[in-house]
Length: 386
Image 1 (cartoon, rainbow, N blue to C red):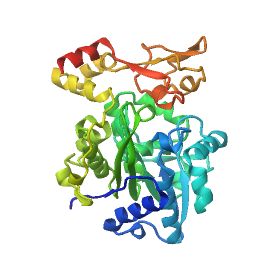
Image 2: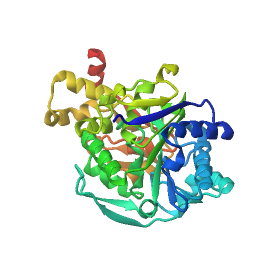
Image 3: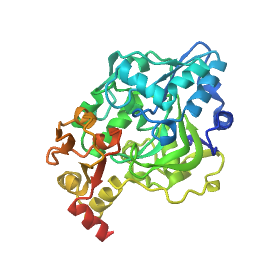
Image 4: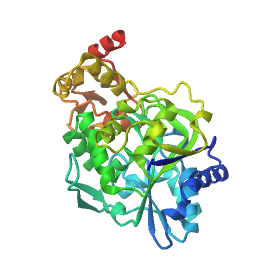
C-alpha cells in the first residue's frame, strides 16, 4: 500500500486557526486518537535548535506545539515538550531555549510538561547501517509515544531538515558533536539519520510549514511563507512530499537518498497517497535551496566521479565557513566544532580550513549569524559549468 501524507492549507499562526488546521490535517489519518491512548506519556519532539524567537522560523512554532498539546490532553494523555538543542544539555541552557522559543509559554497555557530529564542510555540497533548502538536521552525512551514536530527548513549540510533530520536531537547535547566528527561524509551522515529514524520510530510526524525557512538554513536562512501543515506516520514519505512542495530535488537530500538506497521510498510523489488539500493548490515560487550540497552533488555526478574520488574533491566543492565582523567572540562555535578546527583570535572566530570537515555546525549554531559560507575555487568553476 502507498504511504499516506496529509496536507492542509494554513496561512498564519493564530492559535485557533493553527489548531483547526491541525485537526483537519490529522482527520484523514484517523485523528490523533489513532496514535495516542489515554494515560500515555507522549513526547512532542520539537525542533528547537537554539534560543531564538518564534518569528525567526528556526524552531517549531509554539502555536503548533500548543495545539497538539491541547489535543493530547483531550485524549487523557500526558504531553511532554522536549528536544536536545545544539550546545550543552543542561537546565540553564534549556531554560533559555524554552523561554525564547515560546515553549515555556505553551507549557504554562496548556499544562504540558517541559522536559528536564538530562539522563541518557545506550540503545542497541542491530539492523543499523552505520550504527549498531546510539546514546539517546531518556526523555525519549521514557515516552510511550513519540510525535516528531519538525520545521520545514533548508539545511546547509543535508540540504533539507524535516522528519528524517529532526530525530538527531534525541542525542543528548554535545554528544552530537562526536557523531558529526565520526560521520563527516554527508552521504554516510544521511544513512546515520535513517538509522536513528528506524531506531526511534516515531508514531507520527507533523511538519510546521506555515512559515518555513529557505536559503542558508537551518538557522541563517530567511523565513519563507509556505502556508502548509503536513502529517504522516511515515516520516520519509512526509519529507518527499514536503520537498516536492517547495521544489527541492529529492535525490540531493542526503537522508532521502539514503532512504531510497534502502528501499524505504522510491522518492516519487506519485507513489505516495497525498490526502487533504491537493499539492496543485499550492503555488510556491522562489524557495531557495542552500548554496552547498545541491551544487556539490550535481557537479560530482556530472564529472562521473565515484564515491572515493568524490571524497577527495569534497572540501574543494564545499563552501568554507568564515567569521564576519558580526562575530562577538562568544565561543559557541569553538565549543561545538566536532574536530576542534576553530579558535578565538582577537575575539573573533578563526577557522582552520584544513581541519574543517564542512559540517557547518558553527554556521548552524551561531546566535549572531556571523558565519558566512564562502565559495571555494572549484565551486566557482561549478557555477560556470552550470
